[in-house]
Length: 110
Length: 113
Image 1 (cartoon, chains in turn orange, green):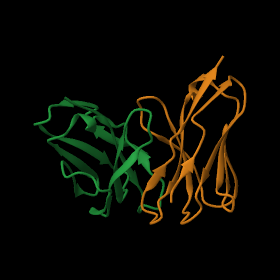
Image 2 (image 1 turned 60 degrees about the vertical axis):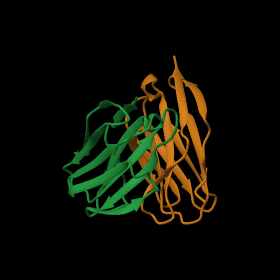
Image 3 (image 1 turned 60 degrees about the horizontal axis):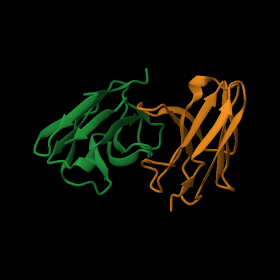
Image 4 (image 1 turned 30 degrees about the vertical axis):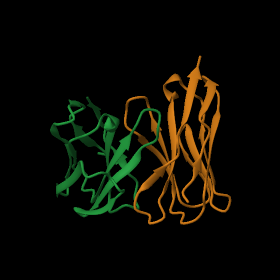
């Protein structure tokens, strides 16, 4: 199967660090993506992990453990504009398209 | 440039209407996708075109008909839709094929009355 699990909602304050976890079934793994989606807008690509370890891009980092079927997105120095839905996605078994998790809605308050 | 454009931004149609959604990219990407997204749900794949050929149809009803006239354009023809088809329709593209990162357009918000 392609079950992808992530928390439904998270809250944090400006300037803080938040970690959004994602677990997935490891069969047929072809890479894991994180997208950000603001309400009413299209998903925006954040990161792609295919090998184990941490990938850092400015305030955002993404981690992958293939053996554990686990990834997280780490957001540092949170800003109000980071309030959005964060979607974890993996390729389907054929590697032809993305299967999304239900998304984690992050609310950042001052 | 990672821009995928979609028109129209909003569309209201009756159940007997025929309309089309358009998607365009000029990044030289060879795979293009249609997704459907209902409110507070993740995007769900509908169709995949790879090198202008339909490679995946996720059991989508025939009232949705995709078309890929060339490598830069992707259309979704709509006919006899139902109110439950109201959703955000997202187009995406990726460089050489389905294995690569997908970039999304802004979507068309469709309301079926």
